[in-house]
Length: 149
Image (cartoon, rainbow, N blue to C red; front, side, top):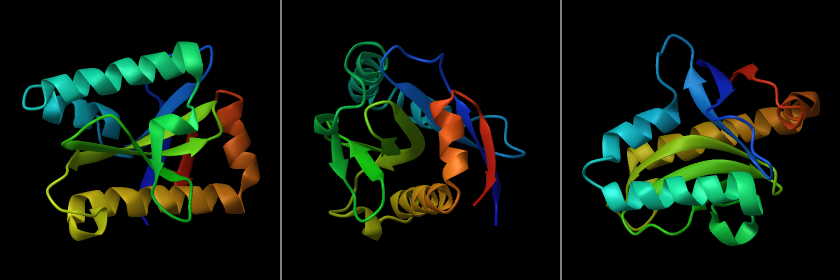
């Protein structure tokens, strides 16, 4: 399995702490890669995502209404964009773990290898948290966490 580390990508928020995934041996985390990849070609949607995350972080928390449930795990897609898909784990209103995403080119994420791989990775992380509840509590305590997934 590929070793990865979940890190905070921004300072803790008043209402919600936002984490992202960074694979060991890579210099950039998955959220930064996503932003850099689409900041020019999908500028308005990237701005929408950043504003929404800032709102969650400091004003509202990660309310259910901001997300579309993507199945039996805690994997969600951030709503509010037409072309871009950003997938994350959501744990209540206070924690999200961003995994990454891409432009939606097909009707379901299962039809796109990049989107499917992101959702699969997040499901593996969610499974790890379900099997190791102490690991998830580290995020609630605003700690970084390294896991094998």
